[in-house]
Image (cartoon, rainbow, N blue to C red; front, side, top):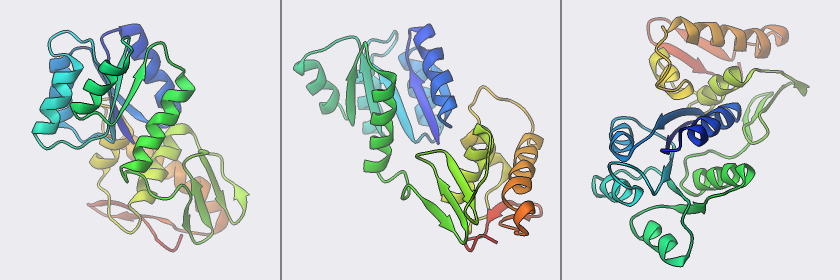
Length: 225
């Protein structure tokens, strides 16, 4: 899952990025409205966290321009303002939800997950492929009933393949969806993490769920291998 956080308070933005990465999200940051609008227009995000009080373009204008351009990415507006008129204006410009500062981080994450569920960006919480069971909500994975311990990035790679089970996913796509735009490394990083996932979910169980399609990418077998 890839998120865009548009927030001019840099300490808050970095804190949100750090926390959301720990939840398994890839997170891009923008610190003004123009940069946020450009990133949201150029990249495919699963959800956007958008502050209202921004330099350049305010959040209302960013949101309205995205909607006018046909961009339907879920938007959670974040602001220091409160009151029913601010909330109404946020929703009227096309935002999907609204949260006032100061806010609870736990509530923010819950709101984001609810947005993703409502907009159909998430599949059912538990993904099952034969005896391979992946639970994104709990960040847990089991194989034949045994717990499989994965790092945050390994889990994110597996989850992305699972949400596109049966499809061949290019390395570049995995890199773009699991790592954020600040990472400018090579595709070998994807190979390293896919290999680690294989060693944990396949090798000990005599399975081959994660397939390499030479020259094309990777595919998770729908039957769990």
